[in-house]
Image (cartoon, rainbow, N blue to C red):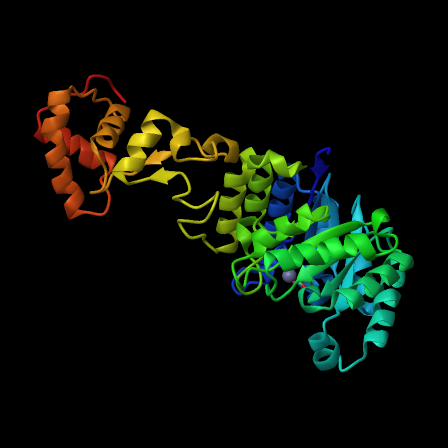
Length: 390
Ligand code: KIV
Ligand code: ZN
């Protein structure tokens, strides 16, 4: 089996930006789109142009700015949305219109008060109309996660005939289990006529904490594009996190999947998105959280100091973090204390370590974390002099 490239479709600027409080102005969308382009994403979903004049202008500006990636605009399945998106994407080097409609019973009956046949017709019309503006048309079957596989396959086949180039199968509500979602992608890959001529795409939400696992299950079962956001931001509990799927593919060669992402830029890109959107990730967030490479218990610290791989499966340099950090708390051992004071210029003998460790524990019991400034004080109290300047 040969390695398969997975296209990374970044929707930080669209699905990510739908989060309350994460609204981006045009300048920030331009800055982030440049960063995403440098990061190596294949597609940037820049926004939903019909939603507001501001978003139209932002998508237009991103379309003019981006040099390498495909620039995509979201639409519903109606002419006005599609015309406005086509207009916003006019200057893109590689424009894509992303159009679609809800296909689950719930969407058909309650949202559209319609029938499966009528929805199928609207899907086909939308793709044909989008195709009259651009070659690259992605179709999304909203709530595909709760759509029957048989009906979904009929819709997919019809929109392929109408000219769709990419089929997006969103688990819009984050409901699917990973085996179920993987099986859905496999079913489509095996049962839709013409599927070999288009790209199957996965778009997963995180309502049950399964967005990353489901996206990977989709890729294992035939999807060749993953839709995701930096830091996993997005509607409600968020989307598949870009940094997580990219690092899963990198750390697990047996999957034989890869992306073109420059992983060394993940940390700075995450920080940039946090800063521009004012939405900060939790300390224990995989890959980009403050504690992702921090070790605080004595047993772990001892292991890490002896050999990083004892407790780390990712080299922090691979994601743009300078080094693992050894955090000093009351759970830290002598090895960690010796390591940290060495970093600031104190090479301790065994006796000096024995003498300073109880003093360190007094500090550690009194506060959450012992920092470099405290270490200087501890050394001073124990009359230990710096052997080298840090
Ligand atoms: O979650 C979803 O279904 C979406 C579509 C609009 C692609 O974001
Ligand atoms: Zn979504």
